[in-house]
Length: 111
Length: 119
Image (cartoon, rainbow over the protein chains, first blue to last red):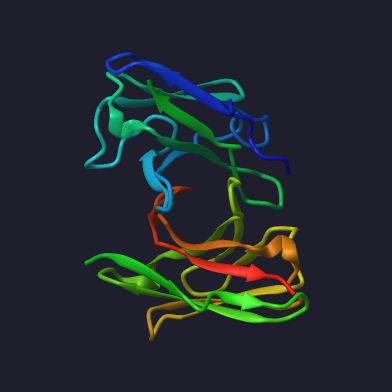
């Protein structure tokens, strides 16, 4: 089971919107509505930002939104803020023996 | 406070063993499936192992199958990972993560414990 494919880096200016893609297969992203997104600041534990493709946990800013089309999921951050600078990982349940697969990770830089 | 706290990491030689622990507090531990997820230095996240709430179902990543053993003690609110035949590529921060009851995502993570496999 290979990792889900994410762009290595995405950048934007404060106030702008950015989108991070997460491409998998019909065995994971395309096959289930079990895509989640995690934010990780350096030296910190991952934090859940989006679950089940497009749902936000309590306490997560509504500037974060998720969607999916076919085998590709996306995380959009609108109104980019300095505090959003972090690594972001997508994850999906998979029908393979791996059970859960993570994305390759995307470093978000706020210019 | 709802939290997970890992311990047991350290430096171990290739071929050696280590046992990680994860102490849960602030929630009903016995109701949740628990997982170990690791992150090699400068790399991405990798799911390692999962155990159901009653230990009835256990799963491993192919990379650790046959070498690692996950277990739990619901009376002690604790999760464990016994790691044997360790390799350099097992070097990583190991996170304990709670899987939500109703879906397939990890809603609570510990801070992690570093395992370094080196001679």
